Length: 189
Image (tube, rainbow, N blue to C red; front, side, top):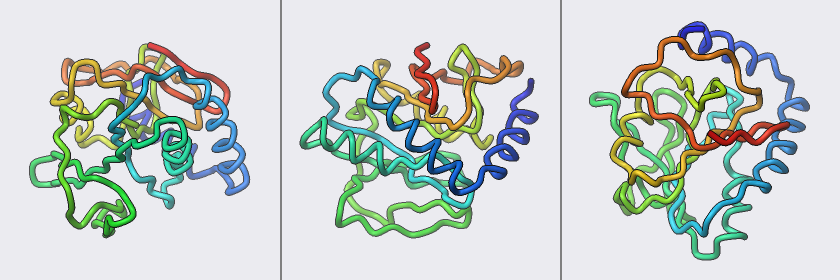
């Protein structure tokens, strides 16, 4: 299937989830995430979930990683929709978040983090395939961002749904995941 068709299908599938279904899937996904064999992480880049779009909640993941990686620094993006790029900011108790025009919570400012420092990225997605290709919201923010990260950065997707059909229109700019965690399976690519 094409990215456009998958984007439409998985937005619809997510929107059809009830709150209780989402909570159950989130709990099961966290159990699977805890089975992921990761090195010690110093810097984790994460998206902040858009709850109205029923994205996988990254806050429980951050709490787990804070416990297993004492001293970890969380990093969140602020997007530039003019150039389709992101700037990384430290995310801590002092971070002031503001909602942008797309309902994304972003840091108003703070300490900028160089992409080269990041050990792992939690990559938002709508769908993914058995090869680790992902479908995001279609603006290419994360592919551009991942292209400037270290070659060994660990790229992890989180999805309430299993791998779908092969994405037929991937290109050389698409950067595949290393892992994708779902409620029922841990995919390694």
